Amino acid sequence: MAFPCKMSYIFIERQLVMDKRIFSFILLSLFLLFSCTPERSGTSLRVGLYDTPPKVYRNRSGAPRGIFVDTVNYMAEQEGWNVEYVYGDWNELLKMLAAGELDLMPDVAWSEARSKAMKFSKLPLLSSWLLAYTAETQEILTQSDLNGLKIAVLKGSYQESFLKELREKEGYRIGIVSMDSYPETVDAVVKSEADACVVGRFFEYSNDSRTLTPSPLILAISPLYFAAPLKGDPRIIATVDKYLSRLMSEDHDTYNRILSENLQRFHDYYRRKILIISFSLTLLIAFLALGAIAFLRRQIEIKAQELFRQKEAMDHIHRMNLLGQLSSEIAHDFNNILCGISGYMELIDQINENEEIRGMIAEVLEAESRGEKIIGRILSFGRNSETEKEPARLSALIREVTGLLRAGFPSSINIITGYPDNEPDLMLDTDGVHECLMNLCTNALQAMGREKGELELILEEKHVPFKKEGIIGPIRPGAYLVLKIRDTGSGIPPEILSRIFEPYFSTKKQGEGTGLGLAVVFNVMKQHGGNIEIRSVPGVGTTFFLYFPRAI
View 1 (cartoon, rainbow, N blue to C red):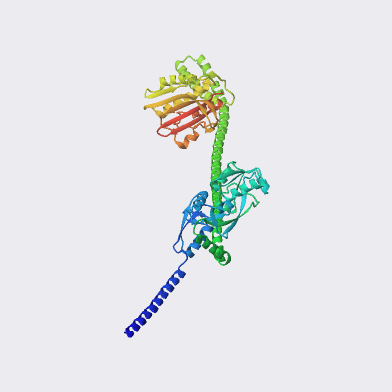
View 2 (cartoon, helix red, strand yellow; view 1 turned 90 degrees about the vertical axis):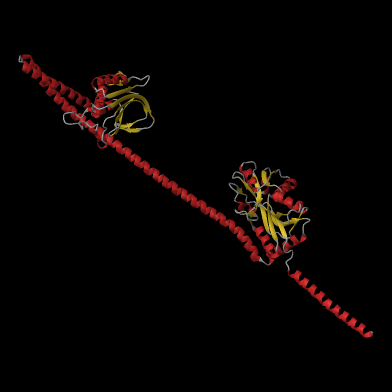
């Protein structure tokens, strides 16, 4: 019975040895497994995020960026953290951190009050200092210049506690205007609600300094830390300290890369912005220059056209004066000849008893009378002296002329007249104006022929606001009585429109006209200080506008 017992003992001993080896192997495996796994692998971290570039901010697409963000991402990559960035207001984020709703808050300056609600990393990632931004009318060169000022700061910030300390310990009379964001502090200064705003040195990267001027005075140095909840996982802030120590002492390349990438990004942004603004201003100046050149060129063209029209008008007036002088000389000579003829004819008529010869003498005297009328027209055209004028109304002359015209015009021609109320008297050469109206209306009748037509004589009071060109030089601004004479005749061809007022120019057949009708109109209107406009469309009709100044 001793042998089986011995065998059982050996079997149990061997089994125990085997169990020890298996247990040792399991322990070794577990040790290797945990030693190779990163600390807190798969840990989720909620990190605060707000806008204070280039430290912490969101880019245009809303992605987290900045020196602190890149540092957190570097640590998360090493540790296997899953980072969730929580965007919000600075003070709200600090409250969330103190309540344990956030695991980590970047860019926090240490203060005694904050140290009672949160833990800080042993090493700061950055160091900043406080600066004052003012309007151009305010200067802060020493710390004592803050005394008596109203200063805007970010609510709950290190700047606010710094100013409160100056007020309490140094006795400064500082009015503190606490705002919820940096842009609001700038608005307070711009709107003169505060004399200055106190911000950190990285404020210049926010692109919100606007018209404010930074003070050269450094008010205080403020190291910037990572902060964690006071009752949060202590391993998180310890891990942060580990990597901050590594970045500062060993991994300089990574630390410098994080700094340079973020700072350079904003330097490039400003450089691009300056280039864009410069390019835009250059384009604007170029467009303005081109616009100015085009405008000046157009003004030169308009002025050249105006001078050309004035030259044509002056040339026309000069030609008219020369022709008038020549016509007057010829008319006087011709009148002397006619006077001699009529005198001799009257003497012959007195001694003649032959009836047949009397008839011939009567025809000669009638021809002489027509010649006198023609000479009268020529003298009227050629005279430069002032004609006798008397107070009269244009409407009375128009009624007189249209009365004569209705007797001689065919019934197919409809004559329309119109007059203004309370028409003023003008100083007029009534004979000259009467002849002027008769010439224009007779020409209208000849243009319309015997067919159905319409002759319109409308007198209106008009005010000319701007200078414009007329047949007799410029029509100057002022009050006028304007007579519109419109017909529905054949119209005047454009190629001869500029010549119709020249003396002796006529499109009628030889013997049907002297070519002095419109020249007389020109001369009469010139003597009255008036002017003429004409519009004609071949096949539609012609309209004359006679401008009589109210002052005449």
